[in-house]
Image 1 (cartoon, rainbow, N blue to C red):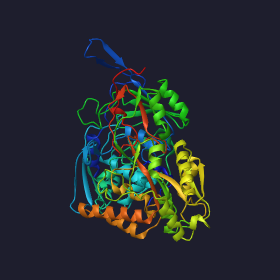
Image 2 (image 1 turned 180 degrees about the vertical axis):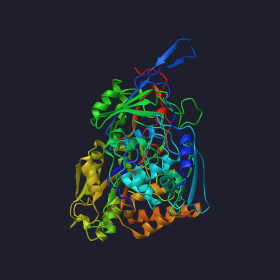
Image 3 (image 1 turned 45 degrees about the vertical axis):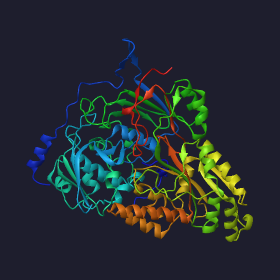
Image 4 (image 1 turned 30 degrees about the horizontal axis):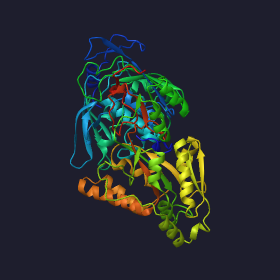
Length: 608
């Protein structure tokens, strides 16, 4: 989800029949026996045969990746940064996911089919039978029910999305903690009746059918459930390790949350700030099934992800083949690719990642629209895209990325115009910047963002504005980014980036203060239009509303859109794309998958 930007740390969450039936359900859903035991270190090798020779070649069965930062948590129900989402999405599966070729079409994953009521308030899902976790515990509708309410009650930053259309009415934390057995079925009639209550947000129809009742229509509901936190951990594992506590993360899950899963990989070992080791799920329910690309068994048996903050170390690991892939900052891309012809960046096209700088509209001097317009006109964004992003960012007018439904190409980015910028400053009462106090630009530690800061200093100096760049730690940046815009320590200019599911509703958080992610702007006209667009079931009218929001955001001059990233797997925040060894291929991309779907990656040769 989200990303970089959404990992801003503090998104505010807006917030049974008779016993004999239970026994019957328990019998029908008994724990799936474990397959023949397989140790985590037992890996098969892939053998290929060259067309020009009958000699077989044994390809590597381990992939090493260097990334720039560690996950904030390893709990799939709480994770919000891309590093953690990468682990969650490779070990836990959603109900549905986006088709490889279309963001508006979905493929079944843990669900086999689904339906929507005409009023957009009720969704019914039929679940796949025979799905189980690597420990043998079964997946079913009761598991789905438990996970949704668990996520709402622990109320971590990632879980805000549930409160967009659900509430916890009728279900308590005590109810959740009573659901504790390895068969993952309710063991008393009271709990079963709560699960089957048709007036609650989530209703279990039967062990393999679940229904969702929305508090209001949400046109992008299906989009939101294709990615974490809409994945489903084993309830029994959580209950055996601390259970559910309201408004608190589970400390055991924060480290061990992906060790048990229903996905193609499991996390065999995770050491925060050091490394994670993923191994092919030895008890994978889809191992011998023909399902789809998303659930396919892995080609590579072991993936080791090292979290190395030093850019030079990651580069050297790539060049020496200690790592077969690594996160490389934008400004180093050309140097790294030029130095080693064995490396490349897959051409995945437009990503769902936006990079931008917000301008505080809540306090002087940038609460003056003319000052904000002058700042935007004075900044040469094209130069930044070419010299800093090395061409791996394209112009965009947010808050929505190009390529998504409703994006209006006729709304062009503001032009770079120093003459206009000077005129606007003069109209604002600051001729040549006279009387205007210095303004700051806050950004996290990053080589390429330091280059962005240098360009901003030069550009704004042309119109008499003194810019004071402030490079701070990632945690400090997150903290300052959540300060109310009218606070004295709120940044005037603040770096931001954002990635989430592929729909406008996922990006509206950038420009709507009431949604609790960004606090630099609070425009009631924009906020109201956003609310209307979320419930607008008429696609033509919704596209018009999205265009109107985009136009109002541009006219409000509160965001400098640096660009939309290209060929970027969103792993980590504020760094850059993944550079791969040419012996690796098969990677597909979707903006809703944060990181790399490792089960799609395979070797075609042995890296040298």
